[in-house]
Length: 113
Image 1 (cartoon, rainbow, N blue to C red):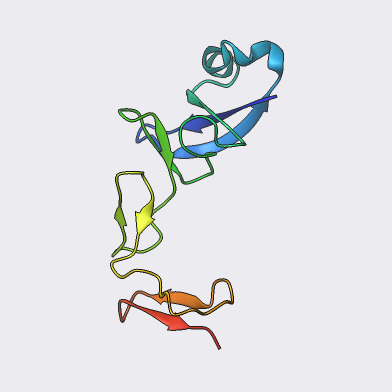
Image 2 (cartoon, rainbow, N blue to C red; image 1 turned 180 degrees about the horizontal axis):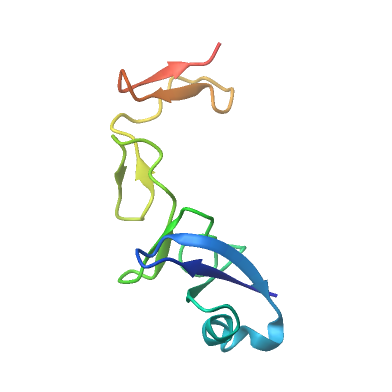
């Protein structure tokens, strides 16, 4: 099975569908002819176009990658097309995963209770 993402005119993902293997080789055209619209293949196991597309993701046609929506206005996109906070996640030895959350108002990481 192959997955294809429908894009709007701004290259924002509207939906992702599964296409039978027999249509994968010409999947973009098959999707367009069947449903209309603009389509790009995406990979559930992240083997193509950086990562699996989701609704609201954007498609960068120049670099041929899908990009997650920006999580916060202060975060910037790095050279690997990942969003980075203005301040690194704390490395204070805390062993609990996701022990902090980003506080956009104070531009800082806050410890969860």
